[in-house]
Figure 1 (cartoon, rainbow, N blue to C red):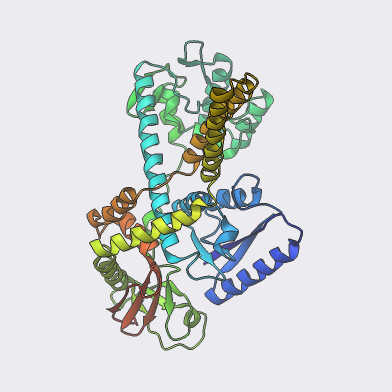
Figure 2 (cartoon, one colour):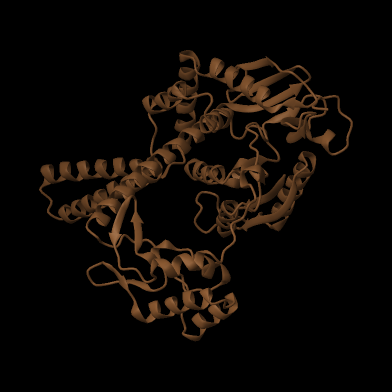
Length: 479
């Protein structure tokens, strides 16, 4: 597995680079134990974890994750990843969408297990609002396209937008595009086409010089035929290239016969959750081919895979994953357990309120209103006119505090028992064969799985004396 390390220390008199060095050292030990190859270290120095603002390395790490530069990120503890639970949830959501796991070097269950479920609720709500926003944006784009208007999508070289927001041909650049197609069809080299754009001072849509990949996409871009599809709506646009010239250009590209599906990445649902009960190593995915040529997928002790001796036998992926999913649904989706989890999440949220800017602002608002009442009482009793200016200033301050509270609540919304309970009960309607649902169930409820020959012990995200499951599994080899 390919991984990265993220480290951070806050501003303070006793905070130095030694903190970063210590975190990185512990994370490297964790990586070595789990068989993870570290390819990058990201470190924010002298930066608070209360917000992602100013954490340039953290944001670079998220961008690299989206580029699939690594498969996991190791942090020393969850508070190094962030201190604002909303930011933590959104950061984890970004990693999850990129298929990147978040691991902790010095804590197996960060900040209390129910905190993970709370973060999962926040992630789910963020996904819901993101999907809802996307639907509204798509609907707006579709309605705009029906009017024949430009919707903001990138335009190919040779097209522009007029004052009425219609896509029209930029004749100066379109002439160069036509020449590029003509030269390509007569056997010109790609470098000659790049030089032609450079000679006329034409760059790509983002201002970067034309590259070989841009040329490749251009010669296959059907928008040059006037085909502008916006969410199923065709914009009325004049073509730059005629169909015969376009089809001739397409003949010059060889279609790959490689089967991409055969090279697709195999997903292991319980990756980074399963550990060998004999030696403590993390289980990793492995494939093997049977006598009939069929490919099988297994979980195998990571230490054994690296050559160490361990008595744990490989376990069929599908069998282990299905048994874990079935037990999790049975144990964690009962009314009693959901009520218990909801109550504990509300406790965590109440503790978080002490650090919530909105709560501090509400206290200031209460103090402000109390002072206003005192001034009004004084005016009624004494008729002192000099207090009117002070009252007006407090009223202005009250208005500003109300606005600040609204902004703080938008950034960090408060979850009610009804919202949390409804979110947890929504798992009951999930399809146990759906990959997205299975992943969400594992990420939300399962803290750790210890595997032995013939059985697996599942530890759930619930505090001491909480439930755990022991399930029977078949340990098999494909040889």
